[in-house]
Image (cartoon, rainbow, N blue to C red; front, side, top):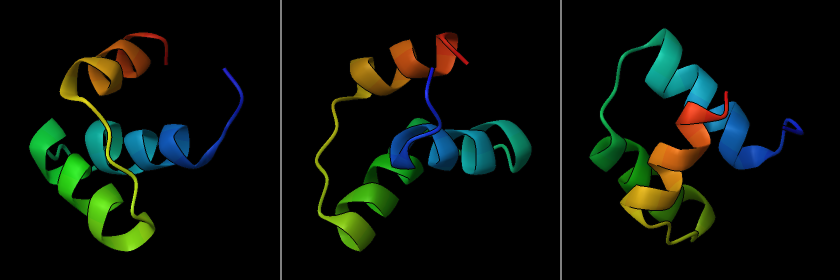
Length: 48
């Protein structure tokens, strides 16, 4: 998978720092105005 914004965020916060998907959703919504579904984020985590 190409290292885009969402993939980089998931690697940093989910894998390295152990944050939850809800925290990552809130981070993406506040900082980048991206509204991502939890299922989509979990699918992307599996593809890492």
